[in-house]
Length: 314
Image (cartoon, rainbow, N blue to C red; front, side, top):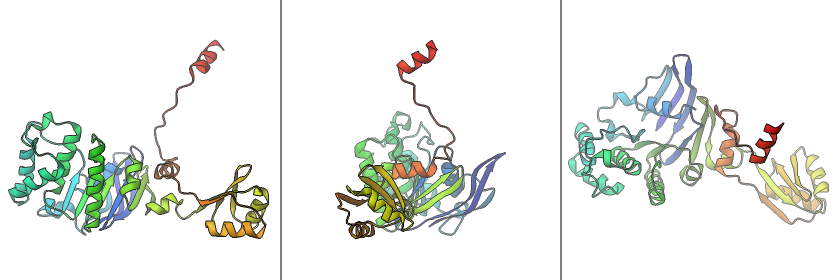
């Protein structure tokens, strides 16, 4: 597995990663999430031996990446699809990686077919679209058939068919027992493919949990209930020291109780229920809630034209 322990990485006076600890385990897709500048790419660079940690460690299979004799056979990574010699062909790029790691040439043919670059592999990389470079980077990561895979924003430049392909690819790797760590800003994709998510902000750990736990508020269940007797039910629930929010005249949102217990409380006070369900938020909303105070740069929506004009006249 990938094991990060008390990892700290400083660039001068800037602390990019701050005492970060988490695991990415075999048989699971781990989503690595955080705002821009949170330290995701720096962490992955340390895992891959491209940066040295200031303190702490980042190990793959219990060892440092730099100590691996044939790293592509154990760890495959796509960190930057632009980090390829533009004058080489896609095939040449893969053959160099294979030769340097003792991988047979036949494997090059296999990964070219696997990622859908057959017919384009003899073209110069400078002629590739971003999506094609992504596919070539994935092919390079798969050359040694490794048990550990890291991908930083792997769906950049891919069309819908490519996104669906990569989704099934990652899911298949995890089902085979491999360790898959994926950094992405596409929360909808992470909700579909990730088993766990590690969320960081300003270099520090915010959450390390299953996707289900994050969607439920990391253990804080919320139930939405509609009833004409909302006030009576709210009083009954609040007497149990349960958090109750009145979201509409006939609607309550209840925290800390499963739906069955909220229904039982309604029956005790004779409240007729029109709706009762546990609330499952999207991963995007859960992520935004968790990282709200960790975003360094906030955009501002433009003012309506009329309001701007009114302000000018004043």
